[in-house]
Image (cartoon, rainbow, N blue to C red):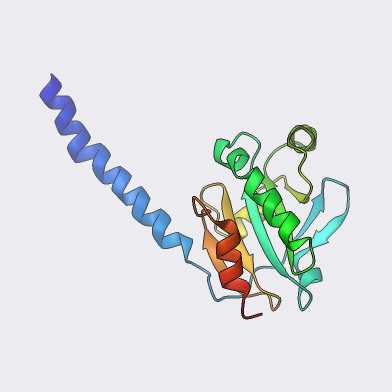
Length: 169
């Protein structure tokens, strides 16, 4: 019986896991160098926010996440650091919550004292347009609207990534 379980894991589960990893890795650079799709979403404050309103003004860090995502919660201190360091001058930080109720998101924002703009993608259409397949997922978009980076956040060093990507702007 134990031998059958090992064989099952080797021939069925391992290929599935490896395929998933390779698809995720391949998709993380998909769209880099291209123009970011425009969108309009409501903020938690009730404002209408479009990507195009920032074009030719400032670069963006666009972060997709959700309240139930442990890794999204873990990155909040680092995102607060980014927000403080750039102070919305050189870089606008937009957090896009995917497919959750406004009430749930508002409680989450209050609990974690999130200072940056939180947008509501209640249908998941913006996440789909950006090819988000897992969260947290980040994009760095330059002033011209080009995607400089796309993928899961680096384990450490959002600041160093941003400094490197934005140093030539």
